[in-house]
Amino acid sequence: MPLIPATILTGFLGSGKTTLLKRVLSEAHGQKIAVIENEFGEENIDNEILVADTTENIIQMSNGCICCTIRDDLRATLQDLAARKRKGELDFDRVVIETTGLADPGPVAQTFFMDDEVAEQYLLDSILTLVDAKHAAQQLNDRQEARRQVGFADQIFISKADLVGADELDALMHRLKHMNPRAPMRPVHFGEVALKEVFDLRGFNLNAKLDIDPDFLQADDHDHDHAHHDHAPGESCDHPSHAHDHGGQGHHHHHDDDVKSFVYRATRPFNPAKLEDFLGAVVQVYGPRMLRYKGVLAMEGTDRKVIFQGVHQLMGSDLGPAWAEGEPRVSKMVFIGLDLPKDILVQGLDQSLV
Image 1 (cartoon, rainbow, N blue to C red):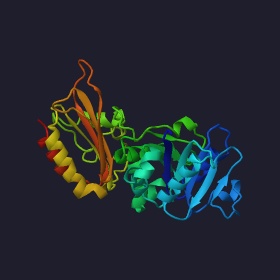
Image 2 (tube, rainbow, N blue to C red):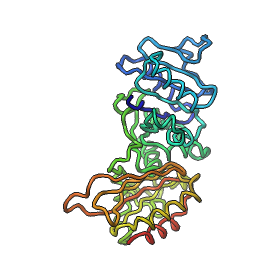
Image 3 (tube, rainbow, N blue to C red):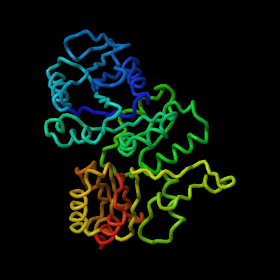
Image 4 (cartoon, rainbow, N blue to C red):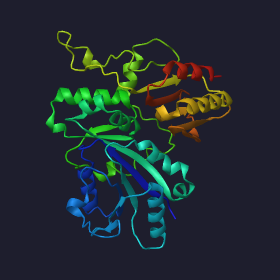
């Protein structure tokens, strides 16, 4: 049987997850979707579209979607759904897991890799994070959970963007990009987002593409003359919008968020054994603070790209396609985490080069 794709939907309280889910569940899109909802959301979906007085915690809907609230462990629920699908008791094509507004998506994502039974039946497609433009600045300042959700995201949707001014939205997007340069972000209105932008994003694919916002890379480039690695954007931020500040009052206030990212690049290839030792050690020590990391690497001894990525302590790597003729063999990595020791990482990576 083909693997069942799963999407993790996260976002702070009131960011519009329920609105987006209602749309996904009630729209006639021809996809049969199972939604697993953590029960203690501040507004449960069932208020409006579900009849909740069943003894069963799985509710079948008219368009073939099903919704279940979990009272126990996610792993058991996923296994139960897969078993019922195999037996033909339930029909669905994909799963969406809505985490509570305060949840850390890390352990939810790890379930798909740590548990063999789940890993054999599901494919984690992506983590989607909703950010409420109106309240985001305050939430990001006050709550680490909100910052972590941004760091984990493969795709960021900004809701309620129409409630803030263009400057405020620009400042928010700039801030989010520093926390997570690998997630595309876009404002959406009340859950009106095409399903193709929600599903099959393959954020966890070990693919040969490392999507980092090009402006983010440029902002680093012309600022430093180090040949072999870049500095974190947090260290000196020269985004174009800083250039025309009026009277010193720029509209980007520099937030020193604890969730930060940095990009590492190298033109010399890596020594595979040294790199494996170093990354293994880093993950042991800093794994809990490493949210997401990914790289497309040039390795000594192979003509193919090596792709690696990870969540917390879980790291995987794979051989990708061959480097094209004439393509510069540049290794690129992005690390997103909580107060990661950039100097230690850069030094260790430099020492793992051939």
